[in-house]
Amino acid sequence: MVDDHATSAKPTSAYSKGFGVSFASEEASNYFFMAVHKWKDAGDQLSNGSVTCGKETNRFDRKIESSSAKLYFHYYGQLLHQQNMLQDYIRTGTYYSAVLENYVDFQGRVVVDVGAGSGILSLFAAQAGAKHVYAVEASGMAEHARKLIAGNPLLSSVITVIHGKVEEIELPEKADILISEPMGTLLVNERMLESYVISRDRFLKPNGKMFPSIGRIHLAPFSDEYLHVEIASKALFWQQPNYYGVDLTALYDTAFQGYFSQPVVDAFDPRLLVTPPITHTIDFTKIKEEEFYEINIPLNFTATMATRVHGLACWFDVLFNGSAVPRWLTTAPGAPTTHWYQLRCVCHSHCMLWQDKQLLGTLIWLHTVLKVTL
Image 1 (cartoon, rainbow, N blue to C red):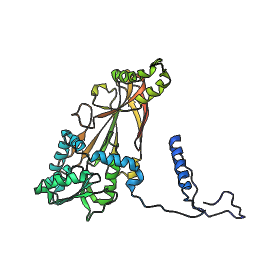
Image 2 (cartoon, one colour):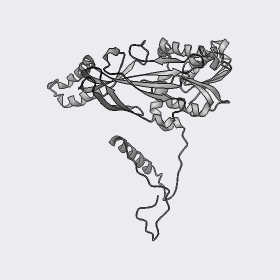
Image 3 (cartoon, helix red, strand yellow):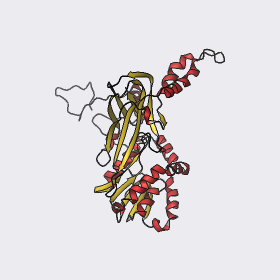
Image 4 (cartoon, rainbow, N blue to C red):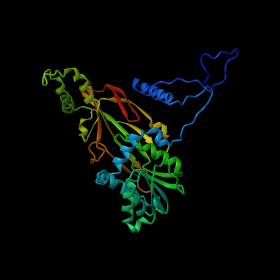
């Protein structure tokens, strides 16, 4: 760019492009300007027309703060958490069935296990006759995976554990199949799906298979007076005008909004749903990584009864589209419970919905921020 006060008889062409920047919130705007000032204060000034490139970073480091990444990998590096997932027999059993029932897809093929964790999916792929399996794991769990795989000598000869991020590592060959368990709460939480798609672009052969290949987010309004009262009652603490001589009521509204801003993760009775669900489908074989940065789902429901609506319920399922037996893994209410449970966003005030009337709104997922409007 050139100085605004530059004087010239001719229009300047010392710049490539001018652009505007808008922010989702004042907080984001302030954070940006603080970062700019910090950069300038460090003396990294650019003269007009010059370009600089800082130290190259990989795609993972650019999208995840280092402190968050450390906590994430520490969490998944614990055997306690891996045991929690392994003991989710719906999850583990469905993966086992999807792989073994579709052994024709794995037999003699090269497999990459993205975010291998304990290595259990790599072992399943080896059981199905894979030619070779590359188990990629970024956390310290990679060492435990090596031990577990070495303890199964009939399978370990075809499995290589690689400790590193899929955004950084290199593999000696392309894969015929990617397998992974990248789903978080509401499917897209934890942002592992982005790494799964990056692995597709980096390692998967054209027309290769992905297990899973499709994810669906299901959403429906619900009515649950008991849950609404339970959450609202938590803020009653802040209505005390004389708590050891202190009036707490100034913080009541803030506390009330805070409690309702937290989604509820639990298993609920599907009879609480007041309309048929709508579905948002994500094709992992086609979606681009950047499409995960912001997911905007328009909501349009038609009531099947007259009732109060207290919020929006969400769950997901994924498809293992095997050549022999396509198989779904679901977290739906009423289905056997998984460690994902279901998720409910509870409104701080209910609305009345009449039979055959429409309820409109939006669900926006922006990185790790969930916003629901009804």
